[in-house]
Image 1 (spheres, rainbow, N blue to C red):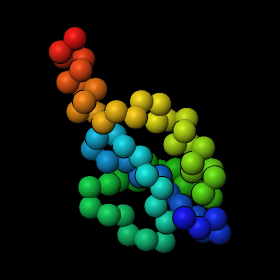
Image 2 (image 1 turned 180 degrees about the vertical axis):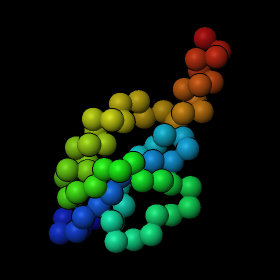
Image 3 (image 1 turned 30 degrees about the vertical axis):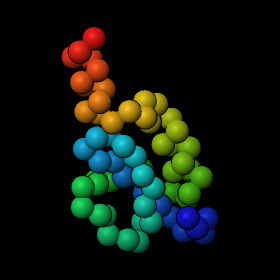
Length: 66
């Protein structure tokens, strides 16, 4: 990852997050969260919002089976 370009934060259906160059087309299966900025800003944002690293489907399964 380069430090000299802007990124956007993406999320997929499993509520997993990724940084993606703002100038690039969003890949299939991902959608923008609306947050964008420098690499460190985006990484800090992901650290704040992605507090449970388990995929959504696993969290749901665990909640239903415990």
